[in-house]
Length: 118
Image (cartoon, rainbow, N blue to C red; front, side, top):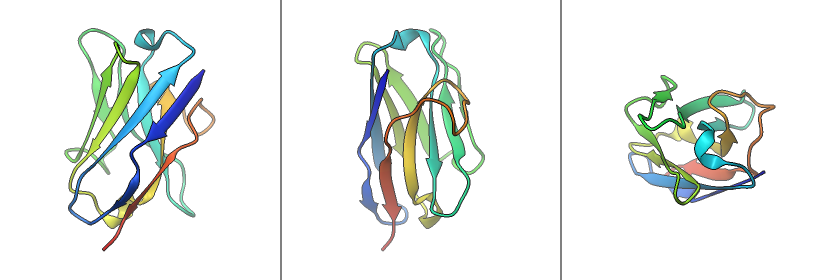
């Protein structure tokens, strides 16, 4: 199993950013996927999950609801996180995870840094 996140960087408050996760080594279309994050000195936080089923189900943490959108492309084995109206408190390392809500010990990629600052 390999998960590789990309797309992080520096973004101004109120701006947008799209993170991508490339998955390989497992039957991607049969697994729910999710995004989590960890800011310096703070707990690991699940933020968004997407089901594997045809009629896609998504769920978001209150901290990102109505601002972030998770999506997937099963043909490309990719998961995305569209981040809109970002805030300084969104600064963190963002991780793609295999599974819907699997916690810090769940399988994840190396992460991509997102910094929200002027």
